[in-house]
Image 1: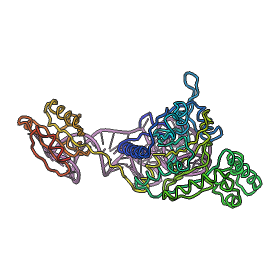
Image 2: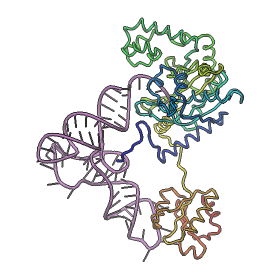
Image 3: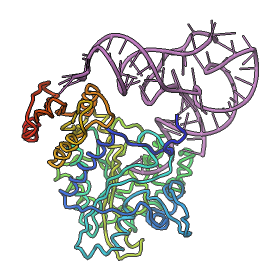
Length: 420
RNA sequence: GUGGACGUAGCUCAGUUGGUUAGAGCGCCGGGUUGUGGCCCCGGAGGUCGGGGGUUCGAAUCCCCUCGUUCACCCCA
């Protein structure tokens, strides 16, 4: 056991897992591009204030989960806990609106939250996310939501469900929350200790309580659905209609709340089976007030973010393995005593042709080199020995077919191409 | 932040009521083929038994503390 270990909640991603993640990222990014989204990369560090303002001063993320620190110049910086606020900040700072609305962008990268790790929860995790800024058309909400569905379909995933809800706007939500709060205060006797506490801090959360008595008490609670203003109602109904026509199956879950303050109207989540307690792989929604909160002009926006480690777990849970690792195409094995020059020359020529090639660097015997070739999944081995060199030939072995031939070094590349 | 479970080779794990040089399988290195993989056979390397303290003639094994991992709560991707 070595002295240094990866910090709690972080881990090394080692091959072949690292390659699965790489392929997953490639697949997801390609799908975003197919839908007209362009790539954006924002810094991992941002002003602490950016997150406090956007996510909400009282949220768990801001009050206890952020990695923030004072840098040597005295500024308070934070390692991003999520991707939306930085994107919106960049949208404003870079004047992306002038590139034409809506601005549709996607990002991939690490996010950081200082929580206790558990199944599907890490302190550093990878998200892919997309944001569509500039339109309040519910069709755009539907497009954002349908991305996940399309990605899951491409990966072969099936055991998931989509939950959607409307959390209202800046007018109707506070009114609803007040009404809910007074209901909860009146029914205090029928609630557990935690729910009584939540009545003050985050009343919407009481709907998550598993306690039987609370559930019974909450039967008569006012729902957000009954309290949406006409505008929000219309937006939500239109969204549901669009999801229908897109052929997506979903459940309206009026108890679903998102953990970030900036959401308005649409909120949605994709949950999977078999992932443990952390079963949400993708979450998102609309954030029509966020740009103003950050000092910009009123601009609507919708987005999603997806946890890629969780997505990998979902694949595992469904027994899917869509990413076969790439094989090495050629391994060059030189018999002991053979000069380096002809080996390096051939290696260079193969690589220049775009053929993946590797060779021995351990000074091993031929047998051990063959073993290495096998371990690397090489398709063919080119053996170079004194004899071959003398006659201007090499031995070409097809490891899959277990056949080999003496071939002239001249047409070797062409010959290898035939096998591959 | 709270609670439970668990820490023995790179990995997965054995280790009998505390007893002498701590084991297996896989992996790794080498040999069986002085120029040939995957199967098989043989050999080898590799372990402060998470760390510290205590009990004992003797601790991987019992006790305490500590660190770590893991699962759950809170909350979330």
